[in-house]
Amino acid sequence: MTPSVPLKNARWEAFARGVARGLTFIDAYVAPEAFGLPKTPGKQVASSNLYKKPIVADRIGYLKAQLAAADIALHSDPTPITASTLRGIMSDAGDALLEAAKVCERIGETSLSIRLRTAITQHSTRAQAVEDRVKHVADSPAYDVDLSGAIRALRPCVCHE
Image (cartoon, rainbow, N blue to C red; front, side, top):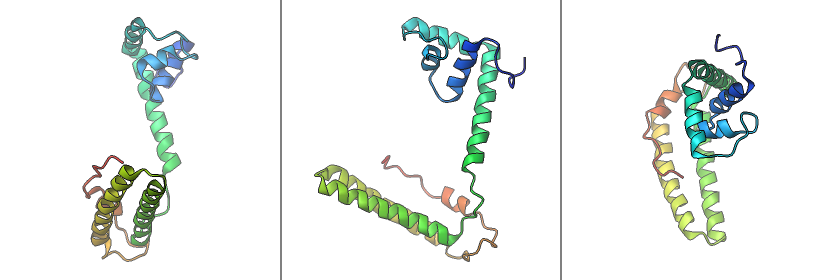
């Protein structure tokens, strides 16, 4: 049986679809559309055993690939990123962080406000780094420049906010 064909056992297919969508094995196993059972320690073993069946594992892999392809198609933006649009995105993010910090101050969440202001400082440093990397780029989509590479080269955010 090829992975592109739904599994003949409807419960196995529901389990595969659940796991492909990101559910844990046990959550997919006990879901109403699959087996509809209460969570017990034995179900953890049963769900793991079902996942180990090659036909089920192959189907899950196929479904995950289909979902990933659909997600990419859904979120792909044909508009090229220029230095100008990148500046705007970074500015909007900074403005949103500042507004959130002000709201936190107004409602008495001082600790959260301080953490947001720290994030603003880190963000402005990153925004300047992006600006420095792309300032030589003309604001024209005619320029064939991979700005996403400049973004990936930045240190990742570690504030976890």
